[in-house]
Length: 268
Image (cartoon, rainbow, N blue to C red):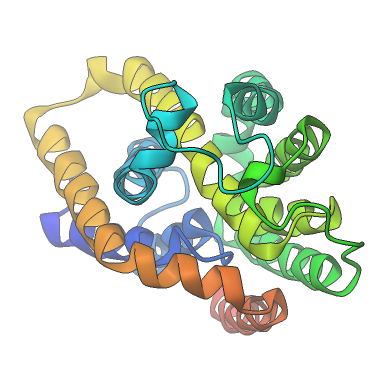
């Protein structure tokens, strides 16, 4: 078992990167590599998935009114359009959840490595530039104006994010922009659909692995979870506005720089 400071460091990395299109999973894997954690460590792979839920829960705090409205528990009216509803969410998350369930073993065994992350960072960066440069006419300036077709299209792009390094938010924001959504609408939808996806992923991993957890493992997981939640809560408002208003190209350039640095790290 690793020291708790390892859980703290990786929790901070997760909390800071979850809401930026730079791949939080990729950054955690790279951070783990720097900390000397072997690629084959199954417990750490599960840990990296579980603590993402801690950061995602910060979204619930920010979007709680909209989430209540999805379930008919709020009288707040849509700002524009007919309004986001549960059908939008379902058609966006079902493709990703189905692919993730069928390929989870392959993903954890073959794709959770620094090398695959570097590849994902580069390819994901190219996708961000494509989304920024080739966005068609905007038909949904607000998340409440998204059509079911756009929601499904964004959900398909989320599948790519199963490859660590691509970034869930990066893939879906770029995909949303290519579908005719504004950057802000795509970002809002991205963060909202992340909630059920990560709840399902975390629940699945915990049920599959909990029989082998010791008390030390539970403490380690809880530490990382709490740290990622607190850090994400402090960062979420600033980062969401940052992502909504900043060109995706800048995030792409950052990804290229990180990929180059770790490429040389892997060669040493």
